[in-house]
Length: 117
Image (tube, helix red, strand yellow):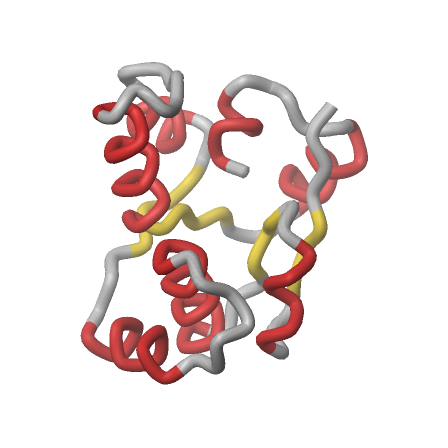
């Protein structure tokens, strides 16, 4: 979702929901995943994505021991370790997770469904 927001590729409804949010956080797990995929040549992303995210009002969300414990204890609804960390962080911190992946709602947390244009 971060890449779509940075590229102005969210649909108008999704963009409006994000703009109306009280706070916008971006997990360091998202940046980590993006950089791993970029290094492997599987993803194209702006080299200054972290700076753009902060410029757009996103606050970094670090990974804590509690987040790691929660991620490891989640039921196996989803196998991607990065997505599982995002779910864990949202659950531990009482956050709404903005995602286009409808499977993440199976984790019983508030989800803001976003769409790409």
